[in-house]
Length: 264
Image (cartoon, rainbow, N blue to C red):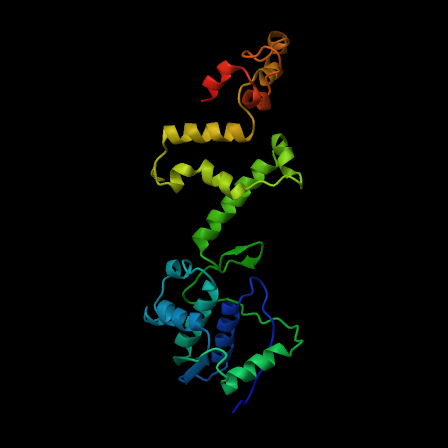
């Protein structure tokens, strides 16, 4: 028998797992203290997440462990606090999805035919086990904190490179650049685990500098030298073919046979 039901939307990084987790929190938060509750759900992720994250650790989890959770870490912390504070006994029973279960069908039908626009929001204020809630642009960081900071740093670094005047051509909408592959190549020593990340390798730094110079077309060609000493290099041409200006493109397109030896 269904005594009460409601529906709402969720904002910021919506997913099926987050919706299921907030549904569990919504049910538990209205229960009286010392209640024993059994939740039927077809979400295996919620069941395994509860037993792996909360129950297995005997409800004692350090902030460090919470911030290592891949997704919805703040809401797992809220769930744990509700259970501990209200002394709830929680158990889950897995319901097979699309198995014509009466209540599962009711929920699917109830959610499908709704035009509710209100947002369901849980404010993570005064959590006992978390003194600080990490945010970015006033948005709570719900994923693995270390991975988020790493990705944020990579994106900021990429943005600085892309916005350099010398890289203006890469910002053209018709230029398709695989930036993920480029950064893999720039950091190939780390990706291949050739060099340790705990010390600075002169060889790796030199090779990365050379790769960046090639990416930004900053190799010391004659045309580049003209900017520094125009009077000296004014009439200089390619030192191999002695016919064309030595630009970055010409370095790789020069057809002089001797240059093939230098390229290799």
